[in-house]
Length: 362
Ligand code: ADP
Ligand code: GN1
Ligand code: MG
Image (tube, rainbow, N blue to C red; front, top):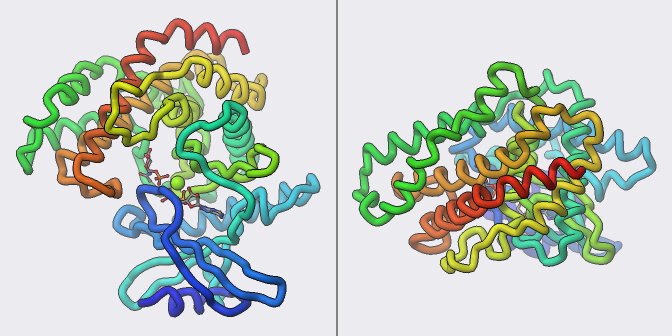
């Protein structure tokens, strides 16, 4: 089915001009669609939902619908601009949040947030600080929202113990005989076993609260205003689920405190940035104030280590499985991604005490 035929099912005014691939997400396929209207050109985000992963698209889209509608109401109440500060779904002509093609492909459309950008590396420290405040506020918003309405999209998404077990299963199977190419990475992955259950155990024993979290808090999932450098909107709401804020904090740290791209082949240039860690911690904690528990606060550095490690073993597992999960642009990309994560984990272990001191400061 061509884009025109897909898009005509949505409540979009104007004349179709074009539709091209857009953004750098690894899971869904994102396109920008352009329409000509009396007021000039208007853009939309069209996304093909990865329905191999998100098997209950109805449940997924209902979550996004509920949260974005709630969010828009809250933003309007405080005089903000809901069309800019929240994702806005464009519904189909029959009022649905997504469109299913005759080939069982699923598409959704969002209003395009103009004059804003998602960054793949930190270009200005203030962007990182801003993203911390945005993710922190988003988490607090979800705290006020009746989360019992949400469907758990990907159970055990950040269950590091299960991720470790999956890694070991793939290693055991080694179905493409690739383990021999990544021996050092495998050894490092196995060496970290003693840490993997730290946060999962705290959550399961209720020593750490379960909260509804975003679960994919990389910098490119916040749009930053290209004129003011302020955070505009948190995007990519597919993984909102019960989780730990230590993991949300940690995912931002793993992605942002690295001067290189996540998939750089130049691993030797990857280095964990303590000043950026401080920048993010300052922003995140400024939002949480007294609402963060002592246990959560004490485990923010471990959240960063574990989230980075978990992402590393997910990339490594995917390499061993034959690159079936994360989108690739070239051979070996998952190995480079793994190496980046593991280099960061090593640096974070070395800087652990410093990270704890920084957290104590705020
Ligand atoms: P994925 O799940 O594949 O990461 P995202 O939802 O994060 O997909 O979208 C991919 C990219 O598309 C984002 O990084 C961002 O640059 C861009 N994008 C997504 N939604 C919008 C929007 N409403 N307005 C402008 N850009 C957007
Ligand atoms: C994926 O969808 P995207 O590209 O924002 C992945 C995250 C990983 C990330 C690594 C649903 O995020 O968990 O941390 O890649 N999302 C899913 O870049 O698996
Ligand atoms: Mg994304």
